[in-house]
Amino acid sequence: MHQLVILGAQWGDEGKGKIVDLLAPYFEYVVRYQGGSNAGHTVIVQGKKYTLHLIPSGILHEGKKNIISNGVVVDLEELIKEMDSVSDKVKNFEGRLFISDRSHIVFPYHKVLDGLTEKARGKGKVGTTLRGIGPAYMAKYARTGIRMVDLFDPAYFRERLEKSFNEAKEIAEKIYNQEMNISLEKVYTDTLKHFEKVSSLVKDTSLMLDKAIKDEKKVLFEGAQGTMLDIDMGTYPYVTSSNSSALGLSNGTGISPKLIGKSTIFGVCKAYVTRVGEGPFPTELKDEDGIKLREEGNEFGSTTGRPRRCGWLDLVALKFACRINGIDGLILTKLDVLDSFDYIKVCVAYEYEGEIIKDFPSSLKVLENCKPVYKTLKGWKGITKGLTAIENLPKEARNFIETIEEETETPIVMLSTGPQRHEFAWFKEVVLG
Image 1 (tube, rainbow, N blue to C red):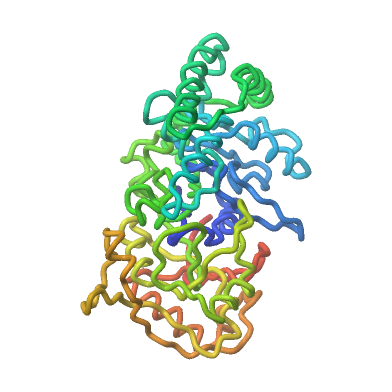
Image 2: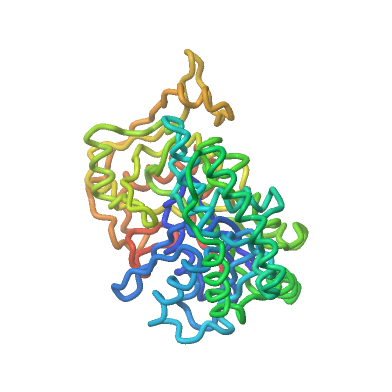
């Protein structure tokens, strides 16, 4: 297994950070390929919690090359704060962290536009993190964005910044009737000040990864958010601003599809479903079971702190994620959250206007009016938290896992049974070393 992709198979917050941290020792490179500081990957090491928004989760292991590739939009101020937050583990980032020279930059005015746009949507708001990610990607595709490489030439950066800043200012004032109380000069000087701290880490990461793969180095790709938030294949328009599925892997890293075509892909999914923000959620629970899932699972956003919406496991959506990603195996997390339930439901189909639907619909209006068709399973009423030996898994929990495998036509390869590094069990034999 020379290349492994770890990605979210639901609406994000599946526990990818812990899995990447757990598997990082087997790889030389760990690569983030999309999103920005709207991601929040939580890793617990020796009782201390680290929340990583931009830096790959492999940073907590010595000797690993961590890459923020060209598909990521980078908030330099947030990046430096994050580097400071792991300074007890990383004394020197040289040789351990690399930033693509082609990655685009998130500026303060992107955050202003993010807030104004979201406010203007009213009841149709998307529920963004307000981190400026969407407007930064908008600028990228409008060809008014600014890349990391541009900062090496301050005069050229100034020229690009004036155009980008003035365009954002006009949008704020003429469309949203809001003054943008941000100084162009301050953005310019602050950006160069921040860049000075990381400029030695900026490299042609596309070239680095091309060489690494051709030299048969082991590369671990870390997705952010989740498949159901993918800009193309997710529950549009209630999605993120990038390809958060495996579809974003090639263009997000600058690696030829031929080179990454043989990658193994593992999808991370919870034993239930959560969602932050707005948008359709067929299995959402607004009753005592939903509250219990949130409390038992500590379901509050690591980036925003918002309470997550909770629901029973949606196997229609999960099967869809397995298909479009080509998932080779699922990693099931938070099984222990279900330990105290008398019964557990899983959604195996939708009902729409009297018709049974087994395939995930593309229409938002159809999805909003779908009712889940449940299969009810007996709960195991035992303790799986901290379980590390599959033979100790309760019979009812095995039945739950087998149901997932049958409905998604995808094997479960690992169980994560708690937030600590050691709290996991391989469910299928996987050769990493």
